[in-house]
Image 1 (tube, rainbow, N blue to C red):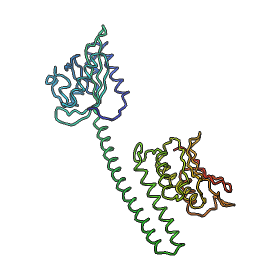
Image 2: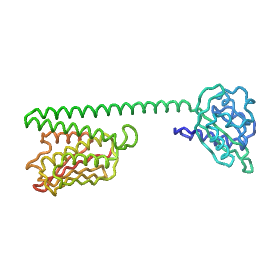
Image 3: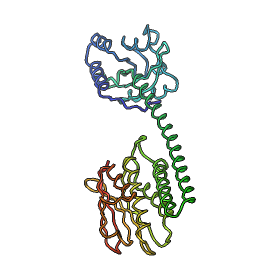
Image 4: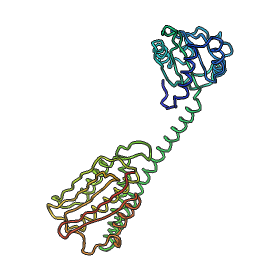
Length: 358
């Protein structure tokens, strides 16, 4: 059972190379002194895998008081039964001249649980045949324990996030329902304002929920594929807002992954811009809405356009006090982007959001 943790092999590799070269060239007394001084657990095996040597530091780490108690035993027999097959394979490969590396658990002779980063290397004689097998084991229990604690913490955080997401979604749905209920009891002007507020709350809930329904890569704060996200969102918005069946919605979104923060902001921007186009663009049969996203050398460009009547004469983006445009400007600022527009009477309008790829 190999453990999925990445530990830098460079230092341990240098030790293996040094000891293997020393074993091939140095007198036996010097070899014993060098191996005995190493803090790692170092063993020499026959090509068949039987123990012929263990250094003093290794005996201390493994709580072995007398090497004679394990001498001539098959090395893998000292390990837990589930780990033995991969260790036996490693010895067989080393006997054929190949270096093997693995990470596995093995308790000491006193029963102390430990994890080991193990390298199994061939030692060649002067004729180039494998004479012995060098095994160097380093205690990495602390690293494994820290990794396990981190994984447990991430799992707990993910569970907590899912619970918070569920509560947020339910709360937003409840607020939207209360606003719609109040709208039914109000005069026309108030009812319209409350209805728009309810729709915005509902959209925020949808934007929030879709980030966790669609597949995301990486961690809790990992990147999201913008294409499927915006496509699903716009299809839902179009179905909810378009009453004229002949008005079409087009998508042209290049593959791009963005942070959750950026995707959430873009989702809210698209909602407001499409909603404004549908409500104020006076779209007729044959008109269309479009959302296009494309990569640029210095970032990403998103265009939301319609073929309606265009923006009012003298439209001032910076001075517009509509809630929808304020939301759009706020979201664009939040992702460090720039918002521009162009429009012509009877030719529709086009809003462009350019932002860095983060």
